[in-house]
Amino acid sequence: MSREIGNNGGMRTLLAFCVLCGLALAADTPSPALLVLNKEEATLAIVDPTTFKVIAKVPTGDNPHEVAASADGRWAFVSNYGRGGGSISAIDLIAQKEKRVDVGELRGVHGIAAMNGKAVFASESAKLVATYDPASGKIERLVSTNQDMSHMVVMSRDGAKMFVSNMGSGTVTIAEKGAAWSQTAVRVGAGPEGIDVSPDGKEIWTATYGDGNIAVIDVATKKVKQTFPSNTRRANRVKITPDGKYALVSDMGGGELVIFDVASRKEVKRVRLGANPEGVLVEPSGQRAFVAVTGDDQVAVIDLKTFTIATRFSPGKGTGPDGMAWAKR
Image (cartoon, rainbow, N blue to C red):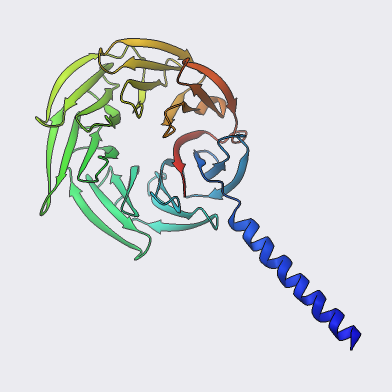
C-alpha cells in the first residue's frame, strides 16, 4: 500500500512539474516584448526590452522584412518578401509557434500592419492591400492601389484610413473606409518608401529616396503641403515620435539616423550608427527608439531625451536585423 501511495504521489509530483513547465513555457515571452526580424536568418527574435536578452527565436518564411503585433499582444504578423514568391507568418507569441500562410498570386509581400486582430499587408506585384485573419485563415483583398510597387502600409489610429507608399509610381495612396474603401493617389516624388502618419492623424511624412527629399502630405486636402531635402544618401524608414515632435529617418547609404523637428521641418541631430541602418521603431512611451543596423547585425537603442546611443545589442551573427514591433499583452 505504501509503495502504491508513493508511486501515486510521485505521479502527482511529475504531473504538477509538467504543468509548471507548461506555464513557464507560456510565460517565456515577456510583456512588453521587442520583436526583431532577422532577414538573413529568417527568424523572429523575441527580445526582453529591459535586458536586451533574446528570449526565443521563431522561424519565419524566406527573407522576412516587416512585422506588426496585434493590439492584444498575442500575434505577430510577418511579411516574408521571399525570392520570387512570398508568404505571411502568423506567429503565436505565447506558444512561440509559426503558421505559414501562402498568399498565392499576391507576391512581393512587404509592408504590414495590424488592425482588429487581422494582418493588413501590401502586395507589390498585385498592386493592392489585403488582410489575413488568423481566426478564419482567410485572405481578403481590401484596396486596389493600381500603383506600382505598393511597398509600405501604415494605419490611422482608428483604422479608418490607411496610407501606402508606392515606390514605382512615386505616389502615396490615401485610402478611406466608408461603405467601401475609396482611394486617392498623391504624387510625392521619386521612390517613396519610408512612411508614417502623425499621432494627430493630420500629416503623412514620406521619404522619397530617389530625389533625396521628404514630402509632407496634408491628410484633409490629400495634397503635398511641403517638400524639403532630407540630406540623406538613401533614406529608408520614417517614424514620428508618439508626442508628434520628432521624425526619425534612417539613412542606409549614410549610416546615420537623422532626426527632424516636425513643426519646423529642421534637422535637429544626426546619430552615426554603422552599416545600413534600416528598420526604426519608437517604443510607446517615446523614451527610446530602436534602429536595426542591418549591416552590423546589431540594434542600436537611442535615448530620445539626449539623441544619443544608450546601448547596442545583437540578435545574432549574420542575422541581418530589419523590421521591428512592440508587443504588449
